[in-house]
Every structure is written in structure tokens, then in C-alpha cells.
Image (cartoon, rainbow, N blue to C red; front, side, top):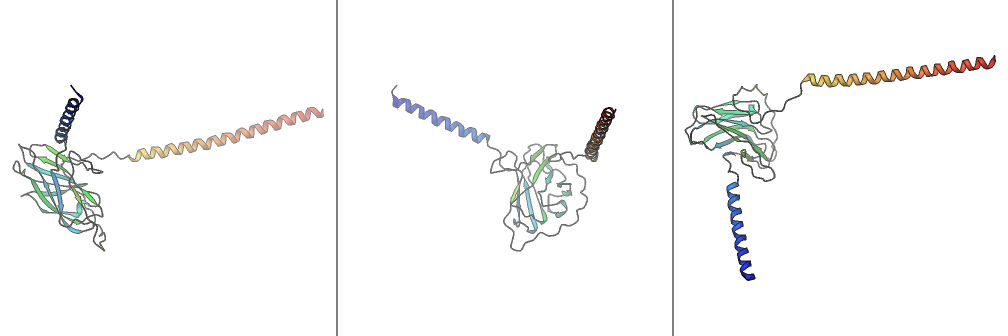
Amino acid sequence: MNSSDTRLQLRRLGLAAVGALVVVGVAAAPASAHAEVSASDPRALAENVTVSFTSEAESDTAGIAELRVVLPKGITPDAVTLKTAPKEWKLTATADGYAIGGAALATGTDAEYSIVVRQLPDEKTLAFKTLETYGDGKVSRWIEVPTKGEKVDNPAPVLALEAAAPGARPIAPSPSPSPTPSTATPVQPSAAVPSAPVASAGAQAATEEDAGGGTGVVVGVVAVVLLLAGGGAFWWMRRDRSQV
């Protein structure tokens, strides 16, 4: 086999390898977003904005029965009201967002609803982490927020915001009512908050350490006094002997 034949075979092998990599890359690519969001006025600090959501049905055996949404920073549950939703679906405030649901939709039917937000925060993007619960108990989690342009397998719905209108200002927040309990599955467990006794124990340890330090100082002073007294007595005894 001459050199030209060898180069031809190597070229063919290289093209085959590239084709295989492309096929593998397509197969391994993350799924496109199945929960989407849009807004009637996607600008920072815009007021009374209608925010619409679509959650694509993925189950072949059950319909969507509930959506649990974690609101992004700057939007509180009391600043959200329901505008449109599937028949008999209701919105319930939670500690970090809301749950909306009711009778399970027909299998294969996308869940579409909209809310009105009193004012959008002064941010560039807003991520609405969403859990989809089906009538058979299956849960789809669209909670991953891509960073630096990377792709994720389960992306949360993200709303891109334009710059605020000239003169737009944050409005005063209204008093937050106590959230209505919800049986929805939490998106992420909250980290345990140290209890008051732990802090008290730390303060007590610091107090004991200070007290120990004070005791050490007192003992040192007493030792110095004793040494001085002993030295004085020794000097006095030598003085008496020398005079005798």
C-alpha cells in the first residue's frame, strides 16, 4: 500500500469518527425547555404585568394536576394574583411562591395559565423554578438555572427583562399575609438554621473563657506578691545575721 492510499484511509476514518461524535452529541444533548414563561411588559420595574406560563405535558398515562412555582427574588407571594387558569384550578400562596392546580387535565394536555405581578423587580432575568405534579403522583422538576450560557437538562422557565422605563421607581411593598399551607413538594429543602441554644452555648463558652483568663491574672498577681514577700523576708533575715 502506497502513501496516498494510506492517507485516503486515514481521511475516511477521520470523517467516520467526526460523524460518530456528532450523532453521540445529538443524542446526549439536553431536552428543550418544557416549561416556558412570557410577559406582557418584560421590563424591569414594570407594573401590573401579566406573566403567562406553559408547562408541556410529558406523561402518557396521566394529566398535570398541580404546578408548584418558586418566585424569583424581588417578587413576593402577596404581589401575585391569578388571571387565567384551567377550569376549577385555584392559586394558593406558599412561603416562597405559589401552587396552582385542581382536577387533573386530560392526558397530553399542556397546562397554561397566567398571573398578574404587581411590579417586576429591577433584574435582568427572572427564573421561575417549577414542579409539575401529575395525577398519578409523578413529578417533573424544571428547577435548573443555566449560568454562563451552559445548557442544563431540566431548565427552569427564565424571563429576560429589558431595562426599566425612564423614571420607573420601585413601589412600596404591601404587608405580607401569612401564606396558606400547601401540600406541594418543596423544590429544595431549606438549610437548617442554628437554634438559639447553640448561640447561647457559644456565648457561655466565651464567658467562661473570659472568666478563666481573669482567674489566671489574679493567680499571677498573688504569685508575684508571694515572691516579693519571700524575698523581703530573706533579705531581713540576712540583715539581722550580719548585725549580730
